[in-house]
Amino acid sequence: MKRLLVLSVLFSSVFLSCTNDPEPEPEVIRSYCYLYHFIPDLGSVIWEVDEAEVPNAQLYADVFLGGVILETTQEEIAFTVKHPWTKEVLISQLFQLEQDKYYNVIVGGPEADPTLLFKEIDTSPPMQGMVKFQVLHAIPDQNLIDLYMGGTTPDKKVVTALDFIDLSDPFEAKDIDVRAAITVSAHSEEYNQDSVLLTSVNNEEIITGANYLSVLAPSTFEPLSDLTTWMYILPLE
View 1 (cartoon, helix red, strand yellow):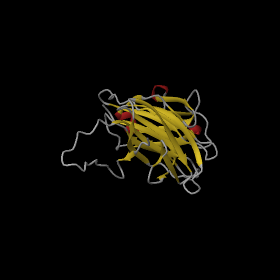
View 2: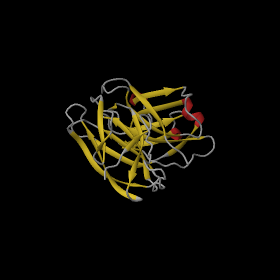
View 3: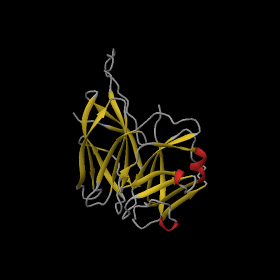
View 4: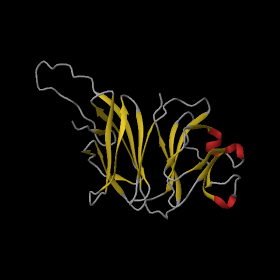
């Protein structure tokens, strides 16, 4: 049985009965996925979820949100990423989904050897006055990185030695620190101004109490374009 990834940004589905006395529909078992594309040099990709092709190609740095219909409360589902023109399979992997849980599914890395990341989303709310983050390092040709929020002293380092196409553990930061400044640098034991890759200040759009996936990546699919911090709001309980 093929599963349908229902993209909330594109359409919704309604099930209707053709009989005069419709019988109750059986409970639909779903999990929820956020799909992201961060392959440099590739403007878009095509996703398949358990052999069902998502109708629209996904642009670089875009996000698709949807529900995956399961047959049981826990099930392995295949996620496949294809080239938008040749339809060549770039990568395909099985991941286990559970009923009513939320997941990030991210494709990144070089086109010749991409990586699929699959992580359950931590939906527990942050403490008062805090913001929850999980960070993805998607800066091409850059080894380990460090991330600072609210300054560059050792106590402001929130992520240490994050590798390329890797996700940090979820963490919380003070909202005033995040709004003040986010600094990304090449990894070092002590802060080095010459190693700074990206600085973002006056981040007033950050919402206190929110949950974010933050992706450090080029601002377009051109690998040499300016770096930026992509922010995606994630669900909370």
